[in-house]
Length: 198
Ligand code: AMP
Image 1 (cartoon, rainbow, N blue to C red):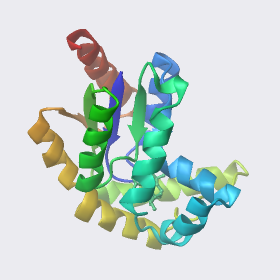
Image 2: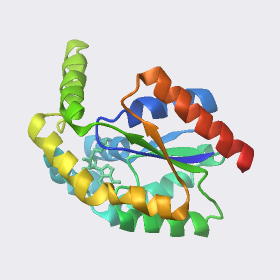
Image 3: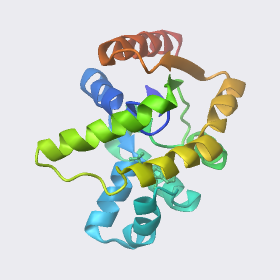
């Protein structure tokens, strides 16, 4: 099962991806997590990505395309994977399509979480407060300024992916404002139907 989760920052992609991992035993490939890992380890990629990530901008397509391509080749991706935070631009989606073709793989579904953007700033502030209360470190880009920039980047560069995947016939949308369990149930339905059709 190869899935893409689409939606703006704070839409709940990470939470839903974690549930899919637990239920279907396939890994979540979050380019944000991979990049934060590279920053923490101080790798060459991490050094190039850090400043742009902290400000809420997008890391270059070349960097993310390469880390995804390498990650997909790992043995734990043989049965499938959930892409969370990638692709984020139409050129990344085109690169992904070429990449999967080259590896003899195909996507099963692209699931978009549709949310009310006004509610997102509130969600992100809540996420930061909960993380702080749990004694964990808050992401450098989980603050109002960086979040607004991430949302702007989303509108300008990522939102066009809905149209792109509607065009390929792979897009399915889910109401991301419903409660978390209801969103999970809708996603499960999509995944079950994609599995029967594949
Ligand atoms: P996320 O955890 O998905 O919100 O990603 C955090 C940050 O990592 C983003 O604001 C970007 O700076 C960077 N990033 C993650 N995925 C991508 C991607 N596919 N393309 C470009 N930048 C990305």
